[in-house]
Length: 275
Length: 260
Image (cartoon, rainbow over all chains, first blue to last red; front, side, top):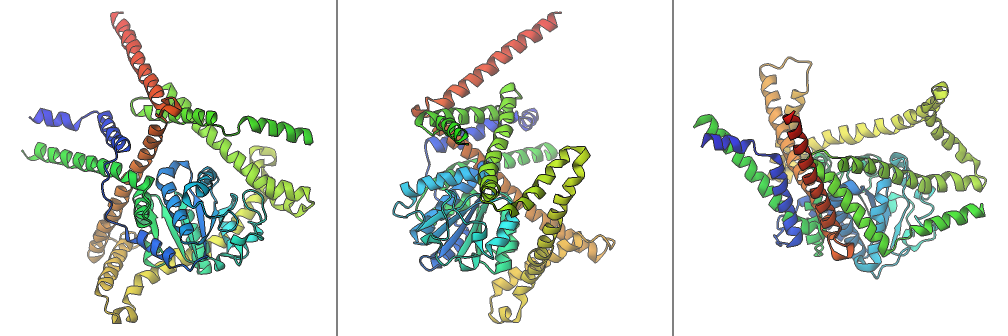
């Protein structure tokens, strides 16, 4: 008995990888449809803030994530673009991360297809080119954004676009949302939100989510979407289930495996020590 | 100039996204993902190839983004239009490259001086305001007279808990007083608050890593479809065959050595 328990503690870790692979892969092949009933408070706050914005308000979406964090952050970005455009808000997509341009291409291709086919580029939304040096860009966003964003990503002048009507700086925008797997949201809080009294919300990876608690407590951030769970919550709120929600099945099963392994190994350790 | 433009256009036309290129992209993506995951079984040459390709492709992507979305519109085109003022920031930026040439590396100081001065001026006042003063304000806010008068007991209790934890954690990081007596007790309580944070952070980290893994599996499932000619199945099968062959060869070599 004791030998068998000791043997279990020295199990080949590759077997755990295999079990994890099976548990994560199975719901992709055959979705279980586990419910997502516990919606995060900060996600709901983000949703409510957008819901409360007057029609045709300008929302700045700064998509600053790269392929490394795509599974967590891209569903968040898609859900936010859907919500904002369906609420008849104007959307400006910005990026200060060179690696994000590919993901923005994906969103740009999807808007006329399935996100909001009735919306027109230049009238309802605009996509700005990548700009380096985030701090300099953020400072300029609060003064005159045309000093940097005088042309969109296709080289068209932005000043004449209907979507930019009445928007000279962040002071003329309704909300800014930064989706990032880096410290870009911290920069936005310091250089844009606090400096220009501009309402900001964020979308971050699950890893960095707890670190933004202080900004939420002080109201420096109006809301926060964290990881794939946050994306699933947002998809539930806008009633349009996509990649975030389908990942919940896999995450739930994987978490059950981790809990079972932690409990089992701790019980075995106790048995070996005291019995 | 026209010849260069035409040559470039002809070259770029080869890479116009077609269904064929998309299928090829699926094979590359599935192949590189499985090659990188193969390290979980054991180190192998396919993992090393994928690792180096990842770094190279990443740098290539960043280079072209900076070239076409920054250098071209912000430096090259303004210069062509006679706006020579862009030369000042461009030369300051280029001065950083002199770091690679020891004889003239001193020139890079001009660029760095600008970055340091500009960066410090922006960062210091805003960081003090955002991460220091506002956080102190946020901790005190629940105890304001207006908040207490509103009778929100939950908010008051929450605020008390946060403020208590905040002070205890500060004691833990305060090294100018010997940690004994009441200070030691406060410091020990601070450790529990820190552990609560680390526990939450670790739980979120696990969830985040699983999400990333799920994302890759989701793509692998996509590339296992007939329109991608079963890329995932084929690559996985080939890699498994390699490991079996490798094990057979190794065991034969090992056996041979034992015989000697």
